[in-house]
Amino acid sequence: MSEQNNAGPNMQLKIRHRGRIAQIGIYFSKFLRMFVFQSDWKVLPMSALIAGLVGIVMSLDFRKTMEGTLMAAFAMACVCIWNGCFNSIQVICRERDVIKWEHRSGMHITSYISAHMMYQMIICLLETVVTLIISGLVGMNYSGAGVVTPWLILDFGITMFLVTYAADMMSLWISSISHSTTTAMTIMPFLLIFELIFSGGIIPLPRYATPITMLTISNPGLKAMAAQADMNSLPYGMVSSIINMVDDMEIGGTITLGQVLDVLGDDENESIAKLRGTSIGNVMSVEELLGDLETSDLFEGLRSEKLILDISAGDAISALRKIDWPEEIKEYKIGMVTTLGEVIDLARTNDTVQKYRDESVVITTTVGDVLDMAGRDDTQKLLEEKAAQANYDPLYASTPSNVTGNWIHLLIFIAVFSVLTIITMEFIDKDKR
Image (cartoon, rainbow, N blue to C red):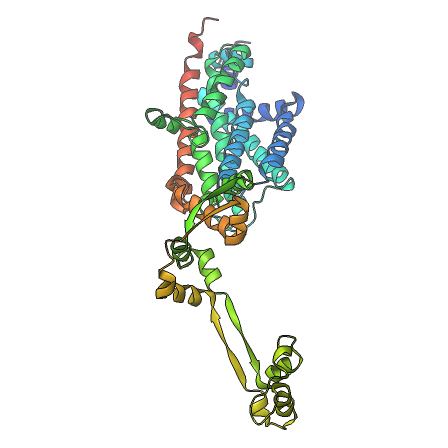
C-alpha cells in the first residue's frame, strides 16, 4: 500500500511535467481539434470571399498601369493583414484562465507558443493558397517569371504568406496582453488603421512621419508585391484619364509660320519624326505617263495645240503610243519621291520662305484635334512613358535584392512578435484576474 502511495505522486509528477517537445505535440493536436470542432476553419471561406471581392476590383489595372499596380499591391497586403489578424486575435485571451491553470501545473510557455506558431503557420499557408487561387480566378494576373523564383505566382505566394504570418504573430501578441476578447477586438481596428495610414505607398506622409512606415507590416509587403509586379516599368495610366477629360477643351492662339516650321523640324519628337518620314511624290513608267496624258481631262485643253510641223499635242502623244518601244524604255521610271521632312527642311532654309517667318495667324481648335493630328496613340504612349519615368521609385525596383530585403523585414517582424508573446506569457501567473 505504501508502495502505491509512493508511486502515485511520482506518476502524477511525470504526467504534469512532460518535456517541452512532447508538450508541443499535445498542444498542436489540441489546436487541430479546435480547428475542426470549434469552427476555426471558417477563416478559410472568409479569406476566399475577401480575396474574390478585392481581386475583382483590382484586377482591372494590376500589372497594366503604374498606379493601378501599386493600389493592387496595397489592397492585397491589406487582405493578408486582415486574414492574419483574425486568425489569432482571440486565441489566447479566450482561454486565459485555462492557460494560467496549466502553466501552474507544469506547462511550458515556450511549448505552448511554439505549438501556436506551428498551427498558425499552417492556417496562414492555407489562406495564402486560397487567396492566390481565388484572386487568380477573378482576373489577377500572376503569370510569368518571378523576380526571385522561376515563377511569379510563387514569388507572390511567399510575400502573401510572410505578410499574413507576420500579422498573425502580431495579433497573437495582442491576444497575450489582452485580458478579454473584448479588449483584443477593441485594439484590432486601431492596428488595422495604423497599418493602412502608415503603409507609405498610398497615403502621402509628411517627411517626419516617413520612418514610422518601417514599423508596419504593410510597408514591406506592399513594396515586395509592387517590385514583383515590376511596377516601375509600367505606363502611368492617369495620363489617359487626363487626356479624356481635356479632349474637348478648346485651345487657340496666335502662331507664326516660323514657329510651325520649327516644331515640324523637331526630329527628337517621336510623333513628329514619324510624320517627317512620310513619303510624298510619285513615280511612273514612260508608258504609264503617256497613257495618263492621252486620257487625262487636264490635258484636254492642250490636245489641239500645235507643236512643230503643224502636229498637235494630241497627235504627238498618239504617235508616241503607237511606237513599239523596247521594254526597257517603256518601263523606264520617271518622277521623284521625297519625304515630308525633306520638304520642311527645304522650306526652313529657303530665303523666300524666311521672309514670311513672322507672318502670324490666329487658330482655334481642341486638344483632341491636336492629338489626332500629332498621332493620338503615339502621343499618349509617349506621355505615359515620360510620366512613368518621372514617378520611378527605387523602393519598388524589381530586383532580387529588393524583394528579399522586404522578405527579411517581414521575418524580423515574425521573430520579434513571437519573442514578445513568449515574454508576455511568462508573466501570466502575476495576473491577478
